[in-house]
Image (cartoon, one colour):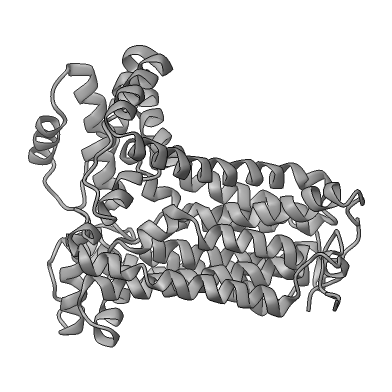
Length: 470
């Protein structure tokens, strides 16, 4: 067997049970090519690829093809709410492949496959080919990632761009190559243009760079040595974002990348608190607030924040209610619908509030009686997500066994990014918001398998040294 020279910790490239690099790539290529056939499910049921938010992106994509979108003389509110990234991607798919929903699904399956290969190639250098292959296969076969690859929404493209950015900044931490960090900044900037949620992730990474001390022998002193990486990361992102902030400021007096945060604050965060406190339906409250503050860039943010601060207990309960589906939801009933089985899982949150886990178990028991196959299918998909969580936690616990400060720093920035992605949606929480966190969690899975699981199974301590990546 050939050995891998670019292995950090564990030296798994020398393990005779580790698959050859070429064999691993062949396995991944076979799985990824087979996944492309799933686009036929969308061809049969194109309606399932279209979610309520899809209608926000498709018209803008068509307008881009006709040269009518994002012009300086436009006053279309949707262009303030929706950043240019995903409509531009859709326009490219329409131009190259066609306008069918299955064409978009095929393109998204392809780019999610690119993310799988990038993950494998990075982890091969860090922990060896066997842990890298396991992590990459888990991502390639992840039902949640595949499902949202078949949907016309931002999540998959956002996941790929942010995931590649995370891989690049982690590679920089190991190698010190400035071009790698510059490319990470470019990809996180592109991710911001798809979903503004990438902005707090980029900021957290910039702050982490100020404390990074993994590279020895920096030139220009400590202050300059720590500031330059921040500029390399943030510079490309600012270049991509700033023109849109200026445009929105000039056209709508809204100096932000997108008004979606302000709309969410009005229509969901504040509105849900009022709805819960006054026992009024959410649509009624939303209509009232929109009448009082009808601008596409809501102006009463201080008022909405005051509502939340006045009722922190209600807000906390609602935030948890939205976070739970982000953490454990699988949209398994949409999988069944794609497979031709008409089943919808009833709401489980209200029974939990009314009677705790006992009431939830009662609801699931009733569902199992009527649709045992559907509930077992849900259990299987949920178990897959639990497996990823468990392995990711093992990856976090490998912090003590990480071979050097750069590896430990990589674990920290990855965990922080995951927490931002899954804990901030709150009231608008949905399992699709976890899709961008899946590649990041599987980076942690690779660390855990490479630095904890395989050394334990082979009864060998993980190596504490590393070779600088080129």
